Length: 463
Ligand SMILES: [Cu+2]
Image 1 (cartoon, rainbow, N blue to C red):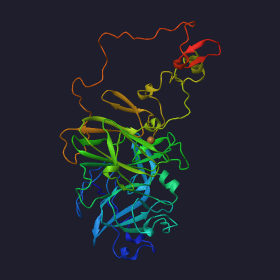
Image 2: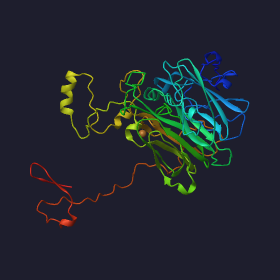
Image 3: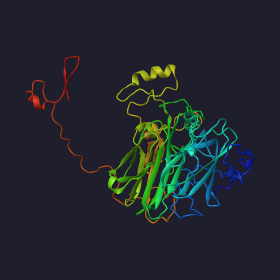
Image 4: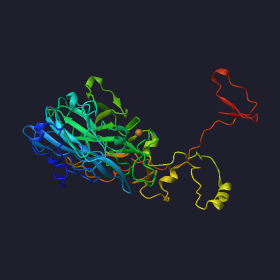
């Protein structure tokens, strides 16, 4: 799976004088690398306590080695190229060949040693978000440790005191390094494998980029106006589907490292939030939801039993977050008939296109000239036609008879006959509409009168 070995490029010769001396006694473990954008098979633990491994959307889990009772991992912070969806690649910063970095999985009670090699053009650190650890391991550059200089390797050591849902990211030149894609998921499984047991456990980080159409590198000073809203640095239609066996108990975990909140909405089910970055939510404190808002810097995990087969949409409910890069200065043209003026404009601007007067759905099907390395704003095709989405949108595919740990795309759902919304072909119903009241009609009593708008001409427009 992670076949490319990088032992030499991050070898012991790079160890800095400030590293923990007892770790320096052994060689630094190899730093596996992964550049494929498709989800890699979850990593079934080859040693240590057993657990159901998580499936990282469009990502992978970092292998480790055991060294005298310590689980040793090696992260390499470095520039990477990430395909965000077929047709568009971004030049980001990440770890071990990708943004986000690999998911780190371990078990409550594990002793963890994580080597971090800095191959960025500036210093960095790693903060372990939500983990209870000694203060000097918390990764805030300048406050808890010196920054990791270019070319040096630092080592972090701590014991996993509790299980749950966490992440890692730099706490050094944070605005730039997070805008460039530096982050990763960290899952600590419970010591008791029956506690909070699920059959499928998906993880992803919510991130956002501002990459001008045709460009490759994000603008790092953007505060709010991002144009690529992504999950694990992928956008629809590039985001993996959540493939689930009917009857499975499913957990979906996500963390938000963008600059705004995201109401994550799943169709077809209700669910309960069972974990935050603060820990597991006791049963008595849960309530049903179909949308869970995740604020900046927060993590949420929700669970449901997949008893309803189908292709169920899952997406951020902010409509602009289910679109790819677009100009936001588009005027509203709905209801504007500009046929008369269009020919005059075309005489001046031959490529001028009349659009938007009936809404913008046409754009989902339009083959428009766009710059290289740019995704259509609304795209994707389903079994019934254009899906007209982008950004933070994927599909939960619930099917019967999938094997454990089978995450292969099962194709589109085959609906039982008679269960798809379709055109009514019977007699057209007669619409019952109130007749327009003559101007002189008796006024209704003040209490139940509706709002009336007086036009400048003096006529009445009833409402
Ligand atoms: Cu959103």
